[in-house]
Amino acid sequence: MNRALRFLPLLVLIAFVGAVAWRLSSPADQKIPSKMIGQPVPTFALAPAIPGRQGLSSADFSSGRPRLINVFASWCVPCIAEAPLLTELKHRGLPIDAIAVRDRPEDVAAFIERNGDPFDRIGADPESQVQLALGSSGVPETFVIDGRGVVRYQHMGPIEPGDVAMIVQEWEAAK
Amino acid sequence: MKHWFAFLLLVAAPAWADSELPPARWANEQLPDPRQEAQAKALMEELRCLVCQGQSIADSNAEMAGDMRALVRQRIAAGEKPETVRRWLIARYGNWVSYRPPVEPVTWPLWAAPLIFLLAGAWLLRKRMVRRRS
Image 1: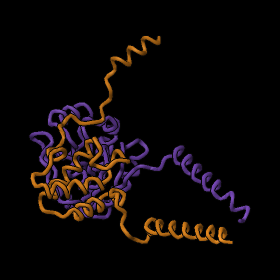
Image 2 (image 1 turned 180 degrees about the vertical axis):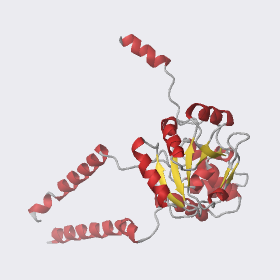
Image 3 (image 1 turned 120 degrees about the vertical axis):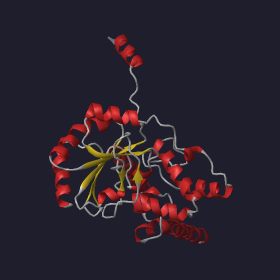
């Protein structure tokens, strides 16, 4: 047998251990981006998350003007962190609607009381069904929907100060 | 100082990352039709939980997995075929969400691997046989 070939199993082992060690030390990006980008918003109609406010339906996204959908929840801590930035986006002229995932009316009301209310409409999604239909895999997430109701952009995780310009840019691009 | 820290740990409220709503009805309740429930169960075992990424939604306790189980059961109860439900989820989350990889150019090494290993094994074995006979 070829002498060099004797070391083949050892090399295979080293390659295997190396691959495992590499992946353990730098885990792969676990974000699951939505495949709905470029697709029309799925048809849905959500009841208002707070009595007296407007609910949210897919028909609200054919107004000709791009809008944001913020997928949030009162029980989500990073959602508190991004709240001031949503208010800033609102001040910059971006219309924002929201989907409150697995939430209770009194909790949503207390949340916007405490953290600001940049939302035109807030739909209640008690069983995450619209969240799943959008291809969203967590809270918070923010989608840009263009004026014809097509999903243009998805921001996963809380909006950080450095993300504001990017979101404004994506919203402008969706016009 | 140490005791103080231990005390703080004791009284600190854990930061809940879950909502306070009960699970969706069909997250943990079986469908009345056993045939549909069997179909739903088989599909749930092949769908990946989005937030606890090594588990199927059948195995996971995450709230989102519960809501995905509810989605699967409701759609199957409404008469959809399991493959339609799977395609619906793949259209949203990609092939990643399904544990059953599709047969397409990207996955051919995966499907060919068993055959390649079998052939390699046969080749090794053949060499041994030849040597022993001589």
